[in-house]
Length: 343
Figure 1 (cartoon, rainbow, N blue to C red):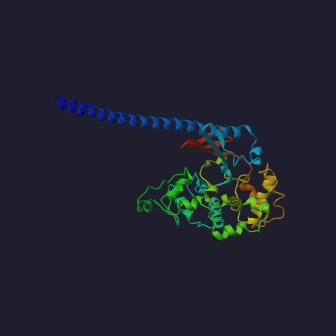
Figure 2 (cartoon, one colour):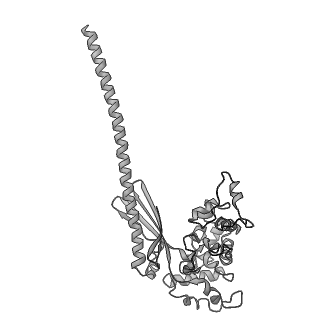
Figure 3 (cartoon, one colour):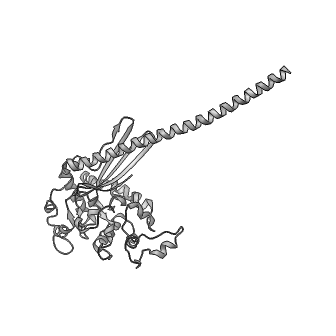
């Protein structure tokens, strides 16, 4: 009897011990998950503040440092990454008025196509080797009417897609929105559009060292030549900033523009510390060059260009261990305020 009672007690104690261990493991697992979650939230909060500090540093540069020094020292396009304790923060700046604004494809006041913007986009497409028909779809996406462009898409076209989607009939808010329009994909927007043969030709000795600096690999990415961040109000005008315009945008400024002239402008811009102080600085560079109208090319370009730096896109990226936070903002240097902020 004593043997049986001892065995029963031993079984009960063993069962209690096993149950206690199981419960402890459950609680330990839950506590471990809570610790991991807390650590993740703490790291994300740190990364968020770190990314915001990068954005604020960019704003400080734009408001306190003369713009010519930002161009001259290259920090406008490639500022160095900054380590901070266990994390890293890096921000970049790009001046958006040197790009072609897709939202200007349609007039704000009458919903009609803007012929000059379309002309520039068509020439941009030609120089990048892509079809200019894709801009018809962008026009239909933006305008408020239901008239279909020759190669565009209206409401019924979008409803027939799999899965169906709604047409926006309003201005684009981001370049990524273009991926909703038939004809656009990630490679078209963000990849180097050159063929293998074109890349090999770019590496051959047909350009001077200065000209090679004028045309970079990034110039052949469509997203680096277009923007949707510029206001379409008349206060901002529709001129292209010749100081921040990449090679293909300069080439698209005018039908008279040639690759040699576009490269010459960028080479002189580099020699001049990265920017021209006045539009008139282009006059001696273009001296003796006649446009298609018979007028000097400088006179043809004059209504289309500016040297004023107005809107800057700020991208700030911070990482704490395995947690990353990205912030994008647009700073209006004229109004000295942010006009967009996303994270």
